[in-house]
Image 1: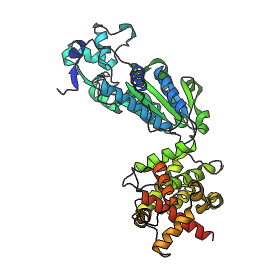
Image 2 (image 1 turned 90 degrees about the vertical axis):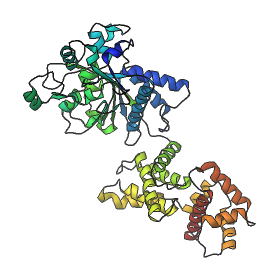
Image 3 (image 1 turned 120 degrees about the vertical axis):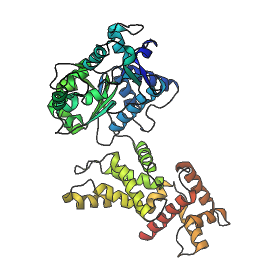
Image 4 (image 1 turned 120 degrees about the horizontal axis):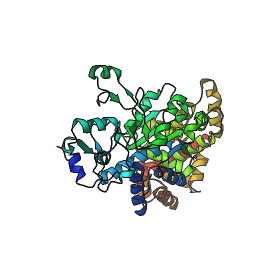
Length: 464
């Protein structure tokens, strides 16, 4: 038997108590808060909303996250899964191996009359399959196998329902496999019952993405479990106890399609768009996740985010932070195709136009492209403004005097200029700015300086 496997008899000697999922979440959240740790370290901004999210779930109520596309609603649910797994990595949480709803051994022990330290009056009856198992084993605890949750995974402690018009209630509540029933002949045989998303998520998290897009019948399938912590599979007269956290998302357009009975059982939390600095952090984080590494200089990144944000009011476009992320990813691909490890201004411009036009309908693309042209700033003016009035003309002159008018900008030449006799106070200021605002663990200071100065000089030439 593996170290993560055990028997009901061994568990009975431990005075094992039933940890409900919301109590597990409360324990790990409390521990992290006392340590001063961020509950959602990769989700920037929305600090109040993140706190309210866990506060509601700890009560045992379900949460409805409402917000525009790309505001981290799905990321919040994914991080919630991580918190539960973090608890299970630290604490021993068990389930009955043959149980389709991952029942806790304490439930079986209580049913069998072993109530030692188990808060018996709070425990449900075992599911029908576990009852049948106890009967078949003649109450022999040594023959009933249990296992420790190493982590909850899809289908065991976690399930995701993706909103769409083709989702059937049976997918959510589960059903009996009639073919297997005809073959086996025993409706309580575990091989007959096929748990739905609710049963799969028991002891963990049920994530319903875009709940407003579900048919009303599929939405109704959630009500019994959300209200009573039980689920009745289709074609069954038996109920199964379940214990799960419910996190659902919707965009504002589909919120009206959430039926009242479901909405009444959820606490709605509005997730707003973050500020520009947090959006820059989000885009930077996503760009740095991709291999091979290609660095996105902050000024080019900020330009992309500003243009996307300026166009969000356009009625022909639906753009959230994902569009900003796409500008950086496409710009990264453009640089990668050129064999570069850093995005140039031209690469970033390619990313901006491609990502934004990719959100427009065919008939609107010409008008949208003109709008981008109209709001796109003169690059030399933009870089000069972002570099806070540094004497960029002086730096360009020093570079040309040293290397000649026809020499391309390169990190090698910039480095020699900074370390050589031609070094100026303005170059020192530029280096200091890069050290302060760029991620110097991810980039080379001379590469970044070269790209900024190249874009500035070319921008000046265009406006000459």
